Length: 430
Image 1 (tube, helix red, strand yellow):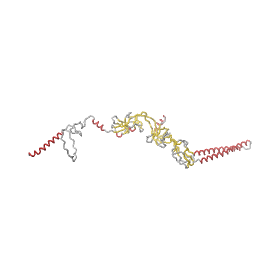
Image 2 (cartoon, one colour; image 1 turned 135 degrees about the vertical axis):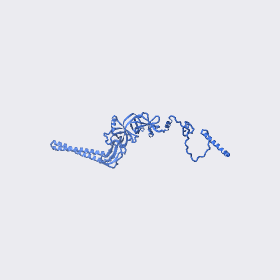
Image 3 (cartoon, one colour; image 1 turned 90 degrees about the vertical axis):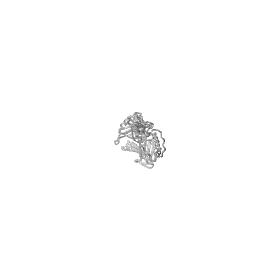
Image 4 (tube, one colour; image 1 turned 45 degrees about the vertical axis):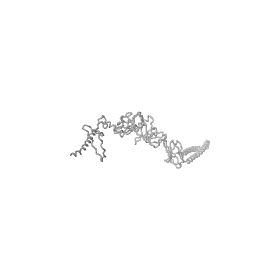
């Protein structure tokens, strides 16, 4: 028995030392660092959180069990507004582009798709038969009224003219002889050497020859006209198109192909339709003065020319309910071409000092039109608006916004009521 007690004493002393070290660490006393242990072969299973003493709130995650609440490692529970501020700060800011509502003069346009037409156009055709000797133009050339376009072989028509002149000369000689005979018969009848019937017959002969000479003059005029038709000239100032027949071909007066087309493009016309409901507005505006018409490219970006309204058509198309209008343009730079489609804008009024926003700011919802209005705290709210007109670039606001209000013009797809935004000003409108 005595030998066993002596052998167990060292183990009892060691157990007391280890117990003292564990108690001291629990109360914040420094404990001796344990000897490094080799890494465990298997990860330890997660341990359940330690239970706090009765009457004390659980310690926040990431703090030591003995740390007091409210220290640098914890969160102050019960602070006024702490939860709301944390939620607002955690909400992501949506990047958007914004612009301000501003007042400016806004033109009121009636828009339509127009077709460019030549102010005048002619298909040049031969008026006499013959061989085309030569052409006097270069394809695409600008010509003046009276410029030579083509020449038909004139020799047959020159011969016909000479023949008509010769026939007139023969008849004139016969008329001269008949008149001399008439004078001779008149002297003889006074001396009763011939009958009055001979005098009357000679008078009829003279009258007949005079009528023949008048016919000869008409034949000469016709022959001269046919000879002139062998030289084909431009009927007005314009531009010639592509040649439709080559020199050396036999052409006829009844050919439908023609020789070349001539179109007048300075000025030039544009014809465009408008709904019949717009006709009273156009007529009333035209009574006040000339109406300006703008011609834009098909993409509606480039202004091609500026002209004025000539007239509406005198009838309304019953099948479409539209009326055609015709405008003229000076076309100094040849930006308009016959057969070209253009976007036309007929200016009928100007709204002075209208409140406007970019068209992109106006959204359409189940309850009507609205914009995202930016608040001073950089959040947005849905603001219903009413429009007077929208030309695709500017929207005229009649209700719902004040001058200087900031609205979102890009990035609306991620917005809702109260969304915080990171605003970027839009580029200035030109």
